[in-house]
Length: 228
Image (cartoon, rainbow, N blue to C red; front, side, top):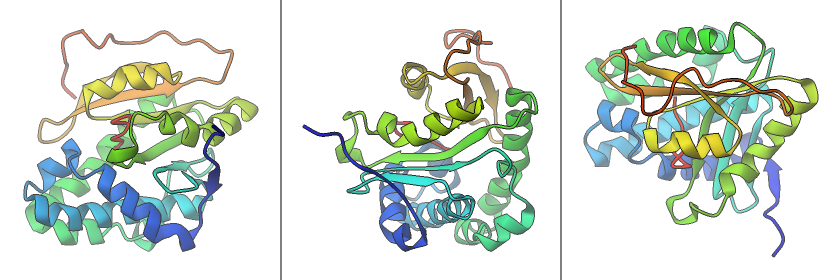
């Protein structure tokens, strides 16, 4: 059977891509903590996915399988640190607005924490940042995460750049390690949420894991499938 075709997405693909990401993130720990009500959470998750999809499309790096069952949103070197204006243009305020004031304020506090953790993890180097990866629940377990990430890996290897991502479920860590990522560590976000940080160095480069998954969990974005 031929491998699924991977497409580069544009704003015209927003509806289908956001639908996939909304389904993939329906029960993600961050969004469940921010919005315990599962009915309203879908509305919040849609805004969250739409915001990050638009941010990636502006940078030119969003890919999906032809059937849109798997979607990855990434920021390339040189554009991996969006400005506040970038965030506003892509609709970041729609997320706290749908969350309402208390949870919305909590959400806005997370951005600087993610940024400082990423800066430490990458050592300030230019890098690819995979900030959203989702696979529809019914399509998980088919290796679509690896396929949809491959264009990012190819570009990173060509330019000798690392790829950085975070995930909250500990069960995702060994899956990412099989994709070539190395565990950097675990931090604790405001509200007590865990956050695992991983990096993939260019092909041919080795890096030692800074922390074992079994080590005690110390104190201190998003990726449900594999169930980044």
